[in-house]
Length: 599
Image (cartoon, rainbow, N blue to C red):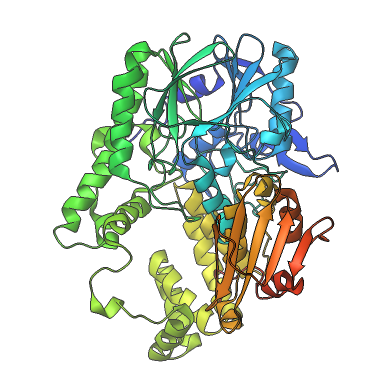
């Protein structure tokens, strides 16, 4: 049963409550640089679907391109379509509560200004982060100052997981995120048209203010600026740290990113911890039980709201069943001996779910979600010893090419499969040819063409962006990531700051060096011991004072400066002052443009 392309309900809901468009829809930084252009999406998505886009993805991208300030219900407003994510504003007794202040400060500030133009110059009285992904906190400095005293509310574990993704694995995830979001692609019918979850990602100033108030348990009730809120924590769902919450006096339910108008990711293509489909389904079910009777409208951190109690329950029930079906059927087939790639080919979605637009894989996909479930339970190894110790890509490619008869022969065979319409195997063969000889223009051109054809046929926005970015880079255009998590540094704990240094130690260069530092922080009263031995930089808080090669007395702000390479003015050193410089000299710099489709 196919979804009905003539059904306009989602378009009606996506436009419902419009107060004003952002005009022009171009948001700029203080230096004049464009950080987001909503107008280009509006222009691109006008008209009928071209043959370079999957019709279902075209429909979804038309919906996510709808931008402006919208009323959700009395006292609740959303900025949508001016960023990948939504920013929600809830009016309180004296001001406005900001939920999820976008990716960057410039977008958040522009959204808040549009709201104030139409609703008055209300001060921000609280900020709520629904979960630990950067598009839900990165713009916080656009709505409050860094030294704000308004409450910053988040689910327990927020800071730990925000740092894990955006700092520890930040460079690798951001580089892969260029493929995931298509950030370097033009917004055209042959390029990116969004990610299904929303339009593009802004490239402005990213910051973070650490939460001041944790939500630790379901049933926790808080009142912010006179607004009553009932919370449900949902760890391990769309993010390791996430929460839904209900406004009982407004009969409105915020579903964070747990229920949106698409099949979400259980493992994003940019990389992340594997999410728990079983828990995800159960938390949606719990939310129905907790909040459905008191809800007239449900809204989320992406897409458009759903109005009417029956429609809200229908949406949540189908989303619940979607994740449960993928989980249970993957486990059933896994226990019959199938591996992830085999299960992904066999699973068929129930007709009733397939007929609902919001279950389609515009952002996640059935294929890579099934593989993620398999990975969560059994890991990367599929049990076949032949796959236990395989060659890495470049070495494997040279051997495959040798067997086939050389690079030219491999390209010829790949072309045959492409001509026959087997683009999947054509991509595999052509990729081997490129990895065996990255200077072979025919191999790169063929692989780029196959990637382009695969991208234009993808219903999943992130698949499209991955394929088309791969094709772009094979043509020699590598776009460096334009969003940095450096603005998050001031919110990190001292342990997290030391961790960010430790993961950059080059173990081979460092393993013959042994040294130690005692750090005393005058502003926090904390003392840390740091040791370098066997190529590992360890550190821990302590009350002990054993001998150290260097004792450093400073503030956290001064540590931030030292880690950024600033002169250590005002820092007191007792011992060998070159110790820290020696440790810093044993680090290497991450590569934000590392190769992906070439060796």
